[in-house]
Image 1: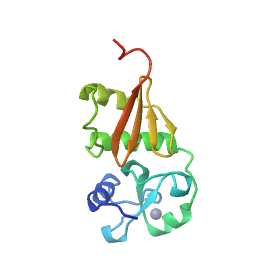
Image 2 (image 1 turned 180 degrees about the vertical axis):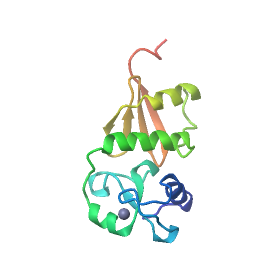
Image 3 (image 1 turned 90 degrees about the vertical axis):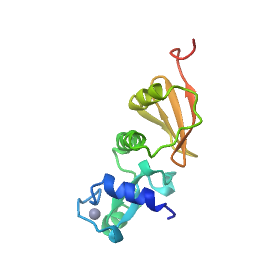
Length: 143
Ligand SMILES: [Zn+2]
């Protein structure tokens, strides 16, 4: 898996150096990164879809999709955005509106070919840790 070191270190620190599944303390050289939504189910290597895992847990989890995936992925995405790990330079909406709407994301619209999140007013298309496109929904931004 080709994950830049900066992202690996971010995930390592984010999880407090512990296996996401069993809580075991891990040295950096012991870690593996698990696709929370598995690759085989369309999960990509976004920082918010990768969790720190010991080898054993990674193997045990295999290709299963965790039941709480939607809530978990949204929360990891919101955290990654807050931590400056998600790029959004080309967007035309004001930064503070973007920050607010990201906190309002309440569902994953779909996963393939990229992650699409949705709040009441916006739909966010994410690829390579970048918000590539936003579609405005409803009336708030039409005026
Ligand atoms: Zn573990």
